[in-house]
Amino acid sequence: MTATALPASPVRPGGTRPYAGTGTLLRFALRRDRVLIPVWIAVIALMVLSMPNTLESLYGTPAARADLMRQMAANASLRAMVGPVLDDSLGALTAWRTGVYAGVLAGVLSLLVVVRHTRDEEESGRQELLSSGAVGRRAPLTAALLTAAVANGVLALLITAGLARLGAAGAAAFGLAVGGTGLVVAGSAAVAAQLTESARLARGLTAAVLGAAFALRAAGDASGASGSSVPAWLSPLGWLENVRAFAGERWWVLLLFAAAVPLQAVAAYALAGRRDSGLSFLPTRPGPATGRLGTAGALAWRLQRGAVLGWSAGLLAAGAVYGAVSTGAAGLVKDNARAREIFERMGGRSGVDDALLSSLTGMLGLVVALYVVQSVLRLSAEESSGRAEPVLAAAVGRLRWAAGHLVIAFGGAALLLLLTGLGFAAGRRGDTGPVLAACLVQIPAVWVVGGIAVLLHGVLPRGAAAAWGAAGAVLLLGWVGPALDAPRLLLDLSPFAHLPRLPGAPMHWRPVLTLTAVAAALVCTGLAALRRRDLAG
Image (cartoon, rainbow, N blue to C red; front, side, top):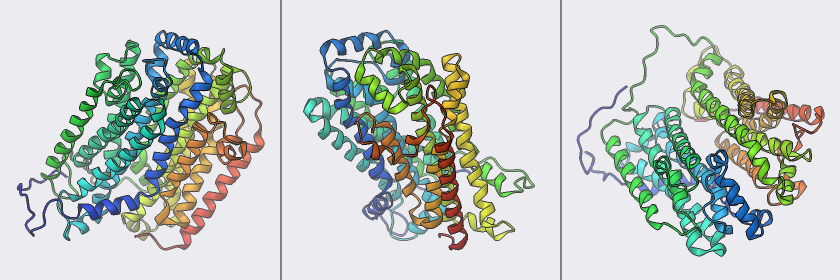
């Protein structure tokens, strides 16, 4: 369908002002996201705030920090991955090490929030019901953007307060830059939600924009050690770097965020005002005259194939990049006892190269856990939107319907880890067997996280979004726990902590089989609960 033009009017025909009900919708959105937003903010903030102590133990002397700057200036691959080092102060190193990834995670949080409260609501039909009451035409989009602004504002405040001891000006600049990056992505998501007809396409389009921003920033940083190349200036992640927090702050760069966000909001409002609810500007390609989806599995693949292909391309590329830089990164830590200790806690005590490779493959395994949660929760989206009812009204049982999506979720996770391993092997130009095994051994742990999502969907359908909290906790334990020297008892709460530390360490099948059995038990319990309960409306 294509958009239908509407007459511009400051007041709706029924007399409702365009922003009426914004406050109510904002409170409702914050209530719905009371798990999602705090978990994501905690993960990002703890990742940033834990870094100064880690870096201080790694590079505690001016000579060590100066040596790091020299090595980074000479290593284009590492600059492409994490950005250039702009100063040797502890604050500048913190901004260097966490800036790009904090900006990316803030962007992911923003796109999830904005699409959920705009296009998701239209797709489910709830927005049409709300709009029939005293809710202004612009209120839903405004509430979604304000929800993203609240989330990014809290994140910016936490970063600023947590890093203030390193320098108040630098902390404020860094916090504002990370929050500004999230808001720019929120604006992109708001525009994408007007252009596309489905939430899935809106998320995919915004994710593609974020991926392009990362690629531009990486290309710019690889070409020079200053961070001021032309490609970097075309990316909000490049703007984040060029604020130069703790390294002679460029406050004027924040004006780029201040200009981009209102411009995107104006574009989103203009597009929203020229279409009917539920319609879009990018027409959907009509299907064939006769249906070709004969099974529940075929329908699930049709609904999720875009996400699978997008994740596949992203993780294949990420594996290649990480594989290419793993040798250079090992050179940065081989003479640093504290750095070796951290990587050994993450990747095992089998030598620096193997420990580093194990930690990098484990990090990408944690990312795949986010995919499996997203894919499993597609069941919740289909159920809450009412699209599952017509399918189940035919000769399709609940278990068969759910199995179609779960095959995509769990089989897709295995495929993504296989592609990640192939990307690592291509980046390293060899070592295919060991690095492939290091990626594939992550499968049972990823499946356990997916099993938790299935269990929550079956037992607590309205609380299934709490699966993001479980994934966020696992991500936090895997990324931040070793650097903080967290107790072993706490780290063992993550299923990834029990896996063999390949390559280098011997293969132990007992934890692999145990985690697989735990995942199977969680899935079976969740499916049994789904079979007995009523559908969520």
